[in-house]
Length: 397
Image 1 (cartoon, rainbow, N blue to C red):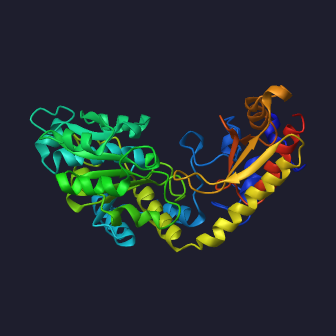
Image 2: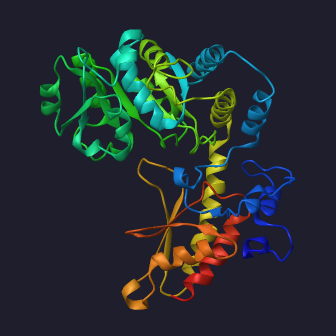
Image 3: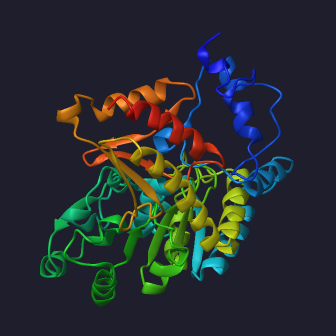
């Protein structure tokens, strides 16, 4: 049997059993009857990096799992549930309308499709052939990113601009939408509020992708109140909803257009972007939970966990560790650890690799600034494990 079966606490239970027994964390549960990951020879890890899609996002909270298990016991009309959940979400966030999507990435495609077609069945069936339809989306050059492929999937052309004058000059009869990437707000010349103002002026819908930007909690309603016509969030990050879920908020007519382009309706660009009843109820309960939690208390706990790791790293001569907050994206406590690689001859990538390969397996990131760790995905007690293992590896520095 692999080393993954040996408990780092000295017992016989595997990592999943230990993690499931940790009290008070997300998705804390009874020890499962089967260790399915062990059967499949897939090795889990302590996530000390953050809510990255490639590494499972976040863990769902117990109340979310309860909602998912509840939904699994019933048949419903999918459209009826879509309508009811969307209405409840809209009420919670003060939006005119809302819908659940298959992650924030699908919201990019559905938002664009809804703007292009409305509820016109002929147009819905026609895209990505945009003959006779609007076919341009304007975006600041600094706001281009890999996920805007989801916008281009509809057949539109992205028109890049850098200044307000360029943006206003680029608007024409082909312009369908103005796209804004929230985490790039401080990079483009046109900031969020001004972007909205321009959209209102030229009467073109504005869409803000805020996928990982729900902290602080006021952000959930911030950009709708600011006046964006469409806003999206990821469900599988800080909301701790199903990883394959997302939220799209905004104008009722634009949400209706997106819904018309989405599953379960056939012959649509979004037919494969299916959202099941479990995900709908799961993200609804996750949102309710997020809005009602004591965020100050939660923040203090994240800082406490981060400080445990910072203290352990700083106890190693030649190593510098600090807690920091990203300016916008994933705005919760992070930890940066650095040392002089040239002087020590030890690369950050080697430390990352050894932590992932070790027992227990721990996932962290290496960036140009140093090792990067996050507190939000750690469950109670894991900060001590990470601190100990990180110190062990750093002592070789």
